[in-house]
Image 1 (cartoon, rainbow, N blue to C red):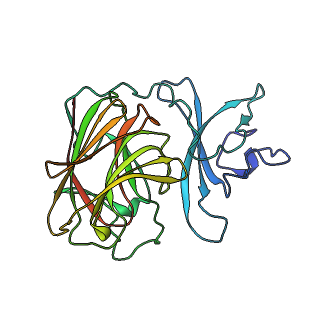
Image 2 (spheres, rainbow, N blue to C red; image 1 turned 45 degrees about the vertical axis):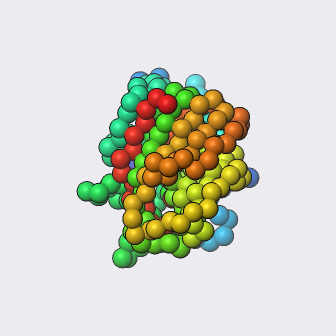
Image 3 (cartoon, rainbow, N blue to C red; image 1 turned 60 degrees about the vertical axis):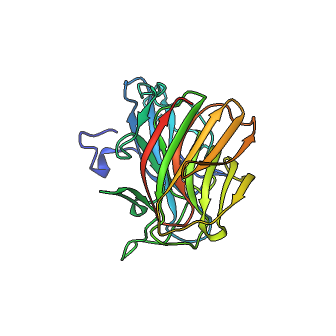
Length: 279
């Protein structure tokens, strides 16, 4: 900046080359800004990147830290791959939730998905409902993740309403989650879901880019009624319940800590009564 008005092109002196450009894993970058962390100790770069290399409008927001050179130039570096974890911005609240905890599903989480598929209603948080005049049909396994971590051992439950829809791949609870981002399996942790199209409740895990099913139970799923889904995690043992009936237990040692979230795949679902307590 060489002039007095940063909105005037003549106030800027351009350098040769790009200060920030696409990488192999993160591409189509642009439309960025940069801000300080909440405590003012860091600078963070906010930008969008494409979800696919093919033409289209499917983009997601990214954020990563950067530094300044001695002569005042931003050193943005390369765009980091999605799901690469790094510390939260300085000053953000990262303390562990005090249990028991009841979520209002309005102000305690971050959302990963297109804004048009997120709606806070009088009956709860509705994810995945297609608007009458959609901006586009970009789907990404819309999810929310609480902004604070949980104790390693807990019992979490939520009520799900499928609004009579039985076609699709299900909705449910994310737990022991870290490194969330936009995408169907874009997190590290476990997912416990109800899958009405196959009349089943299933447990699986994600590594940031892929999914592995661990166990499932087949039983009738009436999508005209609400369902109360519960997961208890104690060490490596997980106990799964539906409508207060224990369905199965399973052991897995991959992920030992993290937070809680709610996720859909492609069934519009209203979540309510998210409660977390000590087991």
